[in-house]
Length: 298
Image (cartoon, rainbow, N blue to C red):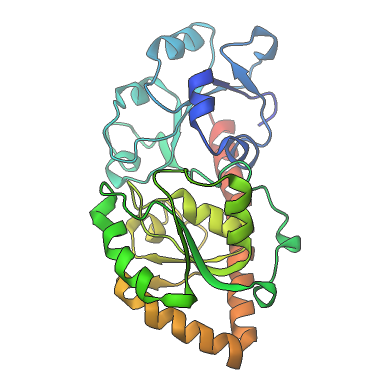
């Protein structure tokens, strides 16, 4: 992916929490450009990053310059954004997995899914320097917006009771909104001092908290969702290694059993954590290669 540039507006780059992940883990360090920078134009395709409304005029302008256009489309977790411009692009990479888009006959296989990734400031982290489970003080932690009434399937509401019932096994620090209430340094410090991290859905089953947890060496806990199971999404290098519960009502007994296991069989917890760390590291490498190969084939 040599000589790529990632074109974005100030609003799009300001609205995205995961700019480091997008630039380095997905596009191999391609530079950001605020608008079309002629000095960065080359024979390589242009990557257009958009967080809100897709600028069809920009796509047409790039096409008029003879450029192949790769749209990286962030957001759209409720499937409420206009995606008609996808057909104008040569390749679309988007987060928030919807089979109806990825497998669309109309779009002819030009859409691939990629994770939105960890928030800038949480990572990047060196997998070899992460705290091991035996060094972490909390069994589990959740920092976030529990009272999100718009969460997918009202999952935050179904999480609230079991979270409270988990007692000292789950450290809870609620926020008053998305990404609010505490700074990223406190968030990452508490997460990295916790072995497990429950990841209830936000506006979509795919939540940034899952990727934050993986980057910080936590063992995520989730309910079953299609993006976790599909080979077109998170399972494309193999099944996810972390626990998937049937409902959040299972959380208190699950954490109690993990507390007992940490005392009786600590190596099992360490091995599970290491599987998650290694899987996430391998996943990021494979995802970058997948995108690179598709761009090279344009």
